[in-house]
Amino acid sequence: ESVVPSVRQVGSLVQWSADTTEHAHITLIKDPADSTNHNNYDAQICWFLDWNEKSAASSTIDVDSDVRGPGVDEADLQTVADDLWELSHTVTDFFKMAQQVSSDIKAAKPPCTFLVGTSTAIHLNFDASIQCILVDVVAEKFSLPDLRGALADYVEREGRTGLPTFHKLEGPHCAQPDAPLPFDDLRVWFKVHIQQGSYHGQSTPPALTVNASPPSATGKYGCYDAAIFTVDDTKLNQWPASGLKGHTVVEVHLVMQPLPPRGKTTPWAAHFLTYVQCLDVIPHLLEHTMQMHILKCAMRSAGVPFGDILPLDQLCSFAHIVPCFGPVADPHLTAENSAHSAQVFFLNKYIDKEFYYAISNL
Image (cartoon, rainbow, N blue to C red):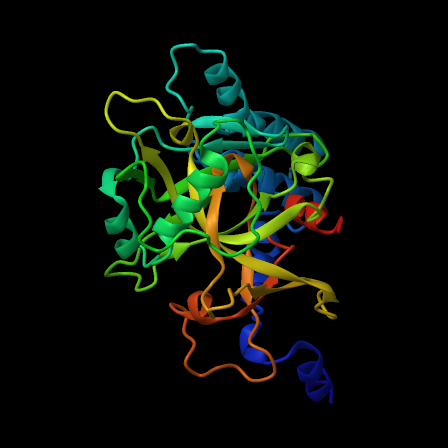
């Protein structure tokens, strides 16, 4: 009797799945419970989960012999737990790496590992995915017809001084699609690693990956992720406490660095850049059941996606978006094209607890 009201509240049931919670119930409850002696479940499940987390990248331990059997008591479990804590694998600390690079006068400029504000560390592989490629070839390869015009606008507005200037996603392109550029080639990366400090400052979680790879034989539309960029310099050092205030949600389609002519040093080559397409947060409107923000693909007056250039040093967070299918799902959408073809998305604040705390501040 609750099916019809539920459909009216949450829309098409095709867009929702219980797989995640069902899988979590198996991996976090059922499997650990099978490894206990069927007494004092809570404590033994916790010990099992500690073991599973801390030994994921280490040698395997015979769990049965350690935590199962009628003679197990709290002291035995504590001994096992103490041993397991020593098996933890090391999380790469890009914050520390960025500080070391910034103090190294011999390090490459711009550095491939750097800090954004105080809460985000960015890391690019030293070797780019494509070391040198013509701008127009990149535009064709990544299906970004306005790339040259966007780069020309960036150089004209903010790239000449070399000073740290915030780029905002606003206004039409001034340059023509075939505008001349002071460079011919780009260096391109297909992914960038982003690491954020814990919201409560207790630890440094593992880094996440923002993909920006072109269409290929295995992915017709490429593989690109959403992210959150700062567009207000007063909010740079306030993320994640600021929430979405002073920030914008985008899809990252390209990570690049302009290559100056050989032997020349130019201000616009001192920054890594991204080509992004903007997602507007619909103001004063949350999905009423899950309380998630609703995003809509921003469009220019010509009816094309609102694409533009943002410096990589304004990236502050990974974001996870979910297509919003509405009351009736488009039958033409598939797992391959849904992110490309959908126009409305939910900003999934439940992807992890750190992101939940940040987004819930708005």
